[in-house]
Length: 116
Image 1 (cartoon, rainbow, N blue to C red):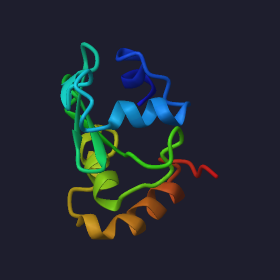
Image 2: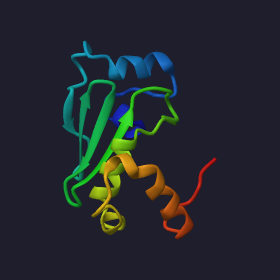
Image 3: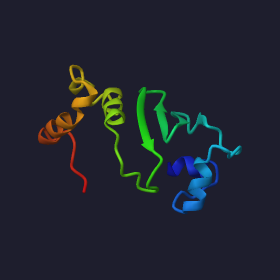
């Protein structure tokens, strides 16, 4: 989100600038487009989807609580794991609704780390 803000001249650490960036009526920020040579973005609902064209990786950001974006959605975490080469093997036979248990297993295996 920081890079998206910079692309369009907004500092997302300033709440008014962040709100201007994500505002649907802001004609200077397209609702979808290219962030960089590797990444596209799409605003949808209360989220912004980032898509890595090379690796086909998906990262979703809930557009609340800037600039930390601390809320994680189980479906979006699942889609990230499913689209990230390092984690694909772990989600092959897992339903998205089982993501909490999978995260705990990945933590125990040392594949991810706990951030407080």
